[in-house]
Length: 256
Figure 1 (cartoon, rainbow, N blue to C red):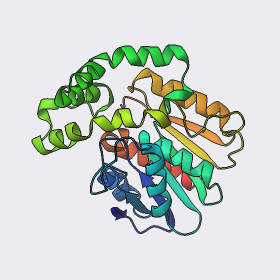
Figure 2 (figure 1 turned 30 degrees about the horizontal axis):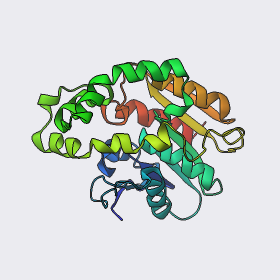
Figure 3 (figure 1 turned 90 degrees about the vertical axis):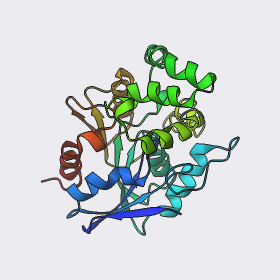
């Protein structure tokens, strides 16, 4: 298993990165919260130095297994972003006694959104889907990041980063069974309502509209949820707005 560790604080935490990233996504937050958290961050399947995802297998299930193996001893705080947010929620539902508090940063659980929001996202992602279907991985990656990236133009990104992302762009579709189809049953009637864990849902004010729809839908069903929106932030807010995200997490984990 490929792990990174950040901070030396009294609270143990597990951090789960978004698709197309790796455990290094948490470096800025690790510095900002190093006095509060000791973070274990793992590379999810197909990312970073982790083993490749095996086509035909369930990526969500494989990611959950990695998260379970990386979970520090005892009850810990779990932080997840995007795909990692979906894995974090799934982990909390499977092991509620191990999760002290849950931070979901733009969890892309598209199945939680209404039909209109999903249709609008599909239209916005048409260029990505067309490029992916045509086997143009770089074009697909560029189109995908235009919605879900840091806001930097594709041509500005370093060549190794572009290559890394393009080589993994197929993993977006592989996450569909968990995020779009909810094949793990996270949204089954009564399941979220039974999660007795404090939850912080963080989203960016400049993110794709479906993100707010998902955050609102989850917030209604999770009994101990609170929501914080970071103005002007897009989907990659743990990277682009690390100070604001760290401040919200700090207030949530150390109230009063």
